[in-house]
Image (tube, rainbow, N blue to C red; front, side):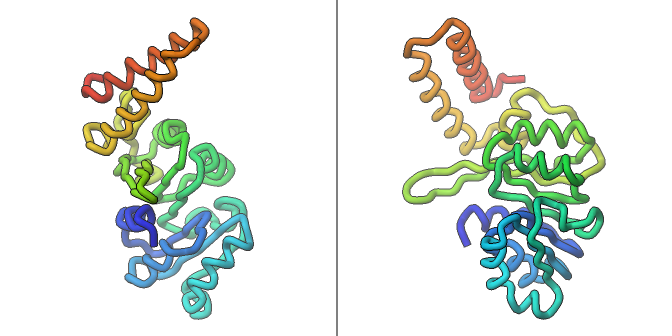
Length: 222
């Protein structure tokens, strides 16, 4: 299991039925079942080939009837209310949004968008979700540090309105060394870009982004 998956698993909590949407190899489901953190599980993937990897890993659980495998798009094979904790990880925020819009927001969820996390946060907040954790973790692979945002919560209860900085980077990421390193990297990239030839509108956009990043880094961003 990769470092990313280990950190995701640490955010999963006790439930009755666990659903892993876009399950890939099925490691998170094995984690839940092997530790008795759920009584039953559902694994899904839009790709039959990808799903077969998880089916091999979870073969004994499937044979015993505690794990169900469904080849489907998003949550279409997980009826609303049939799973009280849903994990959707390793896909873009826009893709996660599409899944939620076409189906429903699960009772409890852990979402790990690979990009477009602000749009996903905005959607969840607008629909009255209670965000329990909205942070950032890193994984070092091949000498490179990769950053991952993760959002854990429930589909009701509401959350206090986010500031611009919280919406951009996650409420629980602010002030952490991991976010500071990410912002410093983005600052260098944007500063280098601003040194080139840009149209007035593009330059204004980049300079505004640099100013915002500096505010977040200093803790002054609203």
